[in-house]
Every structure is written in C-alpha cells, then in structure tokens.
Length: 438
Image (cartoon, rainbow, N blue to C red; front, side, top):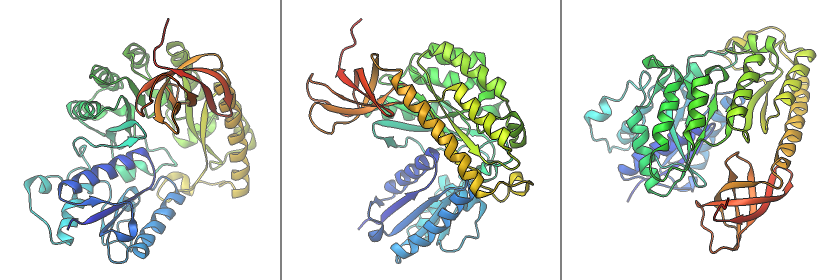
C-alpha cells in the first residue's frame, strides 16, 4: 500500500510551486497525496519567514501537524526552517539550501531509501537552481512556473536573502520544456514567478533583458495565449525591457511593482534601490506601452521612524499612481534584519491605524478602477462555470469578471470576451461571447 502524504503550504506562490514539485517527486516514488491530514503517513509543512507573524504561524503549524497526525512522519521545510533548523517538533527538517535532501531523508526514515547518484549530487542547491523538472501547479486554470530563486538586495526589513540565498536562475530550456508540457495539457495562461524575477540570469552577468528574452521564447510556444508576471522591481524596468514586453503580444497588462513606501526618506531607510521619482517614471512608461494596464503593489505601514508626514506622503503617492490594489502590511520586526534593531519603533496602535487608512485608499482606487471598464470589452479566462450559461474568471488586467454567455456550453480554461455593463465593487459584470468582431 502506498504511503499517503499531506502538504500544508504557507506563504507565497514560490512556496506553493515547491510543494507541488516535492509532491511530484514523491509521486514518482510511489507516494499518494491526500487532502485528509489525519490519515496521512507523511505530513509536510512548507514554512514561511517573511514576517515575525509568518515565523510564529510556521512554528504553530509544525506543532499542529504532530497533534493532527500523531503517527505520521512530520517534515518541516522552507524559509522558516532555513533560519531555525534547530526547530523542535519535526522528524525531518530541511531549509531552502538543503531542500534536495528532503526526499532521500524521508525515504531513509521510512526505510525505503534507494541510493542514487542524482540524489547524492543534488546538495549544492544553495548555489544553483535546483531543477525539479515539469511541475503541475495550477491556480484555477493558470499554470505557475518558477524561473528563479534567491535575492541579492538585502533590504533592511527583509529576511529573504538569508532564508533563500543569492540569486540563481533556472535554465531557459528547462523553463520552456515545462511550459510546452503544460500547454500540451491545455493551459493557456502562465504565471511566471520567482523571488526576484528581474534578476533572472543576473548571476551569469545578464541584465533584466534576459527576462524579456525568455518571455519572447515562451510566447512562441504553441498554446500559450497569456503570460502573467509576478512581482517586479522598479529599478530593473529598463526602457529596453519595457519595449520587449510591449512587443511580446502575450504579456498581460497587469504589473505588480513592489513599492513598500511612497516616502523617499522611508525608502532610503529600507535600503530600496529607487525613489518615488523613478517609480513614477516607470509607471508612466508602462502606461504608454500598455494603455489599459493595471498596477498592484505591496506597501508597509509603520516602518521604524515613520512620521505622520511620511505616512501621509506615502498615502498621497499611492493615490497619485492610482493602483488597482495595494497589499498593505503593518511593519513586522523580523529578527536577523537591520530594521529589527532600529530606533523609533512604531507602536501597534499607530501601525494598525495607518494600515487601515491605506487599505481604505486601496479599496477606493480598486472600485474606481473597475468602473473604468464599464462599456468596454475585456478578454476573460474562464475559471469557473457555476451554472449553465454563467462564467467567472479574470481579464488580462487581473480584475474579476462575472458574466453570462448563451453561445453553447462553457468550459473552464477557455477564453471569452465580455462586454462590461456594470461593476459591483471590485467586480466586472457583463455579457460574454466567443468571437471578437472588429
């Protein structure tokens, strides 16, 4: 009888991708993935360390695994365990640099280990991209593809360069092979993800146009209709890269540009590599290239020393840019970073108030952005068909669309066009059709 393995994944898309990769490897060894943690033989917790709260939750979930599945082998992996390898509670603990060791260690624990040259040669993943092969990970009808790991930036609040190491990139052919495989399975939208996308092949001496070259090759693959990008760093958005994205034809006009603060003085304390003037100019150039583009971002409220004037400047800059959505976080002091020991830490009450204020601004901008599409036609990737003649999905600009369509049976994964009649909060509603006529 096959061993059953359960995955609990915390954190980002990269973690989700890596859980799917490990699941694929274990499947090749005869394991079966289960959605019932109480009946599993192996309980894998893929941890996160991006904030102190993520650290706390990771520890909590490792302890929970032991309670829920007392007879299972508990495996802890990921960013939190990279920083806290002496963590108690797990039978097997690997971080990010020694992640390839997970499978052979598990097989050994279960007395199933078959020594292989591939396994023994894979322990240097901290200095190179560990290749999993094609990984089937979907978000609804989108396929997620990881192309890069690690970060070289060392922002004062961020633990990621310590938990994931320096930049290392996946080979172009491996990326293209995976996408060919997934396109052959019917996926037409691909989310390109990594820890620091614009640093793709930087360790080889390349600039951000290497990403553009890879995306051009992706666009040529039969079946690829939409390419969606993960988080992008403003200072890496060169004129050449923006031009390459515009000419690609498959790039979705939705850009997640990491801002963190709209105050130049706060950005400097954060050790970010840009200021608001550069950010503003990048947005202007992207809007010129993609007139319907949506912009999303991450912002931190209550960074050490942030004054009311800096907070107000940050809010005003967000409104000036006109984001479609802001992921707003109160500053979370993370031990091991410079910001953890900075003076003038902000009280929780002030952080929470500022967070609420910025989230309210985000909600207002998100609603206003949806209204911009009233009367326009958008392209929709159907993700759900809740009942005959009805569909749910996202347009290229990454706004949720609900609609009706009477031109035959609808299938998740197909592309429709929708004439937007009304908006409902952050959602577009309208009538769908299959053929786009001039």
